[in-house]
Length: 600
Image 1 (spheres, helix red, strand yellow):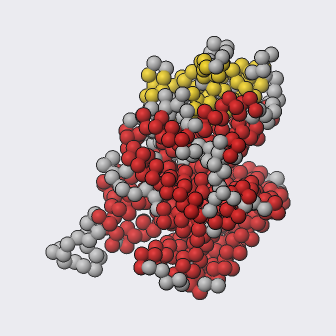
Image 2 (cartoon, rainbow, N blue to C red):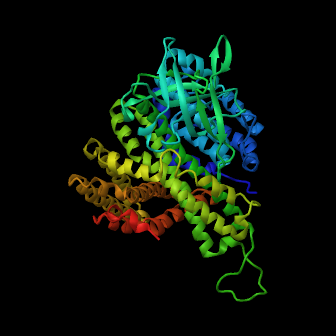
Image 3 (cartoon, rainbow, N blue to C red):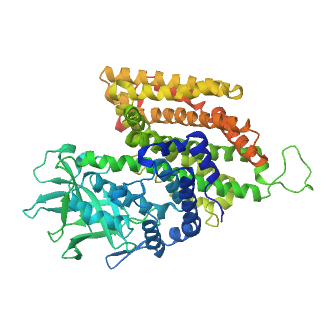
């Protein structure tokens, strides 16, 4: 087994040398923090990850949840972790002090959760779901709901979920059919089924609180008639908890992510499943988008974290495994060399590192925008909001899709051993595959980016993004060694702009299906530009640090950064040209293709 899953040194480089996270402590919201307290949180998260979560990675995979006598049973670690997360304040870390939170900046909280996910994605998922559900209740729920549900959730005693998907309504939430019938007692009677609910039932918590989309009887059709409800497994009543006519109908058996149950729920079989309205009727989807957008960024973080664990596992193997000899050495009497000395193995390791550290940088960029929008100077908030909205689909999708290729490269490095469960790569590959599906498939993210985000506010978000990229490109041009990369990034940004204009022209002609048919390719192009931008920022920071004559170990670190940056610009960014060429064409190939053409 590997003995590493993440680099705290890299996290600190990104936080302090690239993002200047200390700036956060100057804002009133975070006045009680400084770099020392940020580091204390990072160290604590790493210790919990290393001592509790990472050692149980294989255990949770090989002993998945079971469904026995109507109960979902999980490993004892789940209860232990949730209790420690509650005790340490991790569940509500970004929440207000008055709500039991730590008011931790999103950027620092994201970094800590990243380590949890890199150590054990399945275990960390329980925590993230509870945080998102509690945040929804605090944002839109009544005082009664907040008082009844949030404290036990923040203490790690009650699990939170978001319950959207139904058998007939996956990504198409327009078709949500679970019904809510009002009563004179103030609650609603919920009936129907939900599927694919992560952590939807288990014995690692004393209760499960579902934030559930449903349609009030008589509500308008479509998304305008969807409302949001708190629907607990056990409802508080008479000073205790009583069953709420909400049953688990079964578990789904999964390819990966096996440590967290995915359940099918049945509500109201006895006509007494009670739900409490969150906010106003018929606004449920807009409320849920808060949790969904947080979850989309969370998916990108999780994918990057799993890819990180895969990178360090394959890096360790490549350093230890003796295999073959240098290409120019034909003497069979010479001893074999470590795999890492072969050029193609170094290429695959560079791919892994480029994906992991480029994605993590983009995720922390999004976290910076989230902090700036919520708590920064008033004059900066609108722009921060637009930038965050724009890059959220990219933050979700680039790490998810490229994480598969990155983890696959790690498996390739191990050869036949990578395909066995003697090493963690096969599990990590399985764990990775859910991420392009979770919280909206890659195709949905592409349509969101091209169809909404790139055009919102008359394209202002895209202009702001270009300004951010151009600002950092200009800074890089001042560093002689980075000038070629700065020019390549400017060229790629121009390709993105041209592709955007070509697609918008289709929309202007009313060819909407053609306009969106290659939205996934547009998302891929945007991801290349966004991650190249982050690598250029890292290159500038590394170059400046090398000018300060650091120690030999630090020189190795910074030179490794620059080498990985050059790899991304030499091997990955050139793909932008092929994508841009396709996006500039308007033949509508996939639109015109008929169903009958897929006949045998």
